[in-house]
Length: 301
Image (cartoon, rainbow, N blue to C red; front, side, top):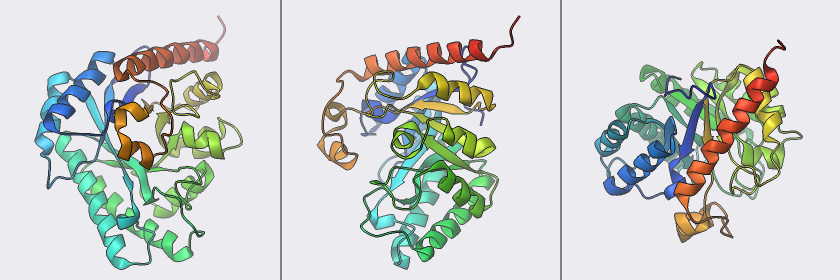
């Protein structure tokens, strides 16, 4: 994935646009993209827009103006859950995923990830074999179309309260391999891994070369370095594995994203109120941690 390069860290450093909120009017997009670029990020993860309401050209123009590369993400919902037994709901999910890939191509992004495999919600029943098969078949179709646009498709496993289908790297890897397309990768979010994995380095070891995207997020989604994540071990494991994809900061604040989005992702308390500050401290934290990890892995003189 060629989406820019951070020479110090030798990996791509990104930030989720949601750090500044989820609104994406032309003015909001330009302001958010500019803020990410000023903080020093290689890329910004952009929410997939509704192309019937917003013009992708506005995002593309802002990205070019500020000199930062994009990735695209989305989370399916109940109305477009591709594990649903309702063919109309699955069709809606297929359409939304196709639209996200088209948006990515429009703005020059080579990655579409997120909760692409099921709805991001608490399920009240276990997954069914039929639902899983529907998700595999749908994503296989999308992946083949994405490949023609040179877009990689990511599958982000999430915690048990946000999906019943994929909660661990092992489950995500098996799912990705069942899809069977070279441009489908495992998307690791450390917030979810902190809830579900036995150890922070397990997802790196399990996913191996199929690991294509990383969300750097504390166990409480607050400022990096203020939670329980063992960043030194995680980053050493990533670098030792040969990973050179994006590491994208994902930290959200209830006071910034607004009530509806806060409820949607369970932000019941506010941990910070200045997105510019959190973006700047996060990239400094990651650069410092990555530099330390590189020195730890360097051969002794």
